[in-house]
Length: 131
Image (cartoon, rainbow, N blue to C red; front, top):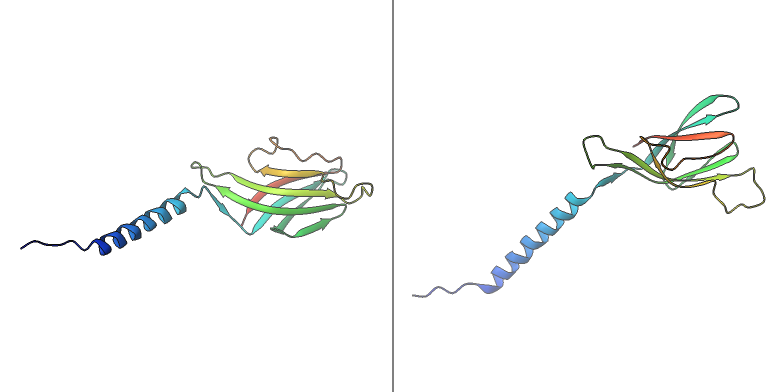
């Protein structure tokens, strides 16, 4: 007596296993975990006041003459010491000549703020955390 293989069931099992492996690889290859809030510190160089802020990603926040917007904030998982990175846009509202130009538009790194520094005569901004 010869046994016939059920080819349709075998193909379905193969595709289900392939999909599971694909989803596992996608989920394990995500190198960063995106958070909803960005924590920054603002130093007023004139008054020497230090202010901590918790910004919701995607929303504008006005602080004196600055409009700050955090677009993304992530904890990278490259090594044992995860890096905190955030994409931040800052406008100087006191400059009425050109409203569309950002004073700062780029990635901030918590461990190395000098890689892409925020350069302003009155304020300093540092990235501290993501939640």
